[in-house]
Image (cartoon, rainbow, N blue to C red; front, top):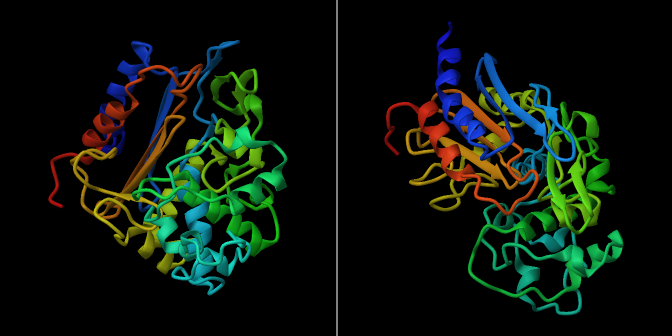
Amino acid sequence: MSSLQELINRAFEPVQAALYNGSIPGAVLGLVTQDGDRVVRYAGRAQVVPEDVAMVEETIFDLASLTKVIFTTTQILEAAANKELNLDDPLTALLPDFRQYDQNCWEREVTFRQCLGHQTPFPAVEPLYTYGQDQQTLRAFILQRRWPAGPHVYSDINFILLGLAMERLRGRTLASLDPGWGFTFHPSPQQSAATEQCTWRSKVMRGEVHDENAFALGGAGHAGLFGSMQAVLDFACDLLAGQNVSGNTVNLMRKALSDTRTHGWERAHAGWSGGDTCSGATIGHTGFTGTGLWIDFDRGLAWSLLTNRVHPSRHADTGIGALRIQVGEIIGGPAKGR
């Protein structure tokens, strides 16, 4: 048995315990090295309501906020590398109509880099879907509303705006763009893990985006990407190997913008989701539906834990936060200096 297989077997033990006690319905855990060696374990159910569907290695997951880093951050940083935009320009460079009726408002000063690093006064989230479902009117509302200003927090609004900027740059909706090999905005429901029994949409969501705002917008920069474990590991391997993305993009993904954040990603710090044993050169991100990806550049190793922890309801204590840390600390091994 290879050392990588032994490592994933140990890391999968707390996942199996969570499955056994019913905390989460199903899970897929994967590890990949810089050289492309990989191992995957899976167990549990892709769906339990209204029918029972087994989890398989190829199950497609609603990646939720992994959309922010796998798709939107990569798109923005690659556009910057190609000199299609300047990260220190305000969003109005691509969205000149943003808060156009108040030329002196703070929103018009917010830059691409500040949005990537969650260094803006925007709120964490807003139930935009409750303001209407006409996609173009909803986009106009986002651009013209007077946003409440608050302390810097992790914010979906930052990435919704980055997504709108990318739509302007490309002249197409995000959902019509190529999200990269193995990823999609339009998955097969039969191949997808189920998420929530949604009271707003009156059905179990499977193969449709769980996030209400992304659903109402018909595609957004903060959520809506779907992919299998193999697609996520391919993406991580590309970053580790520095292939299929520019070197500057990878450097900025690793470059600190604060004690806890880089451009788009979270960076290793005490108590974070990747555990306290990974190296200080580790970046990662999680998704509300129960997904996560962590990349340790010092070790040349990445791991991803994909679960459907919101199925059939988000209103349960699944222990996903503690589970992520347990898995990460097994994979990280002995504590590393930061």
